[in-house]
Image 1 (cartoon, rainbow, N blue to C red):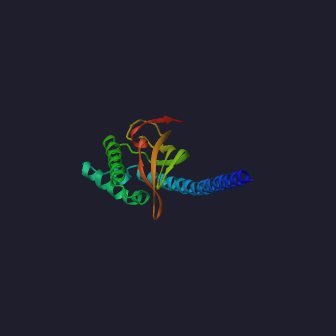
Image 2 (cartoon, helix red, strand yellow; image 1 turned 90 degrees about the vertical axis):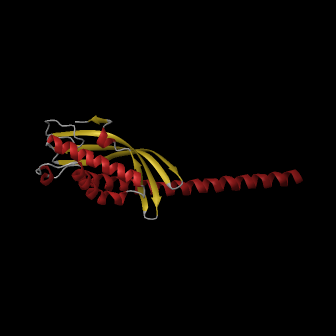
Image 3 (cartoon, helix red, strand yellow; image 1 turned 30 degrees about the vertical axis):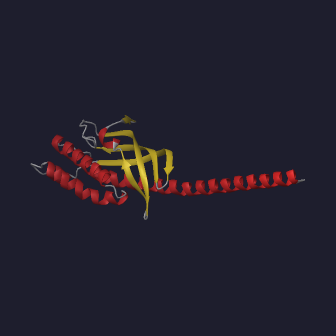
Length: 195
């Protein structure tokens, strides 16, 4: 009889632990689903804003004698909007600003800037959550029109399409998920032409 009581207590305790762990996993999955939705919206909004600043305006293209400092200033101005999407990570913001400046200088030097650029998120894969950080592979489609690529790969085509994969890290802040790091492959290659 004592053995049966001990066995029952052990069984009940094991069952309670299994139920508690299962409940925690269900809660964690629901929380991560909400986090994924927020990260997807962040990416969609960020790449829409990014699209708006990746081409040199006609007014800038018409100016003569622009130097590196002029492109740096334009990139710094355009970063004001993009910074709202970044976590407090000086390195990532500076990297993006420098990349924009490089794009502008290449377009200006070749006297060919894309007329319009659209970057859309195709899919987000391989989420990995760790405390207040998450990482994911973000695939984007890029469409631009005009005689030049957004990356300054100057050509005579009137439009082009390519896909690019960005390895991104996100940080959960008091104001929600923000971009902590991204590779910027859109600007420097590692893409596949899709059209």
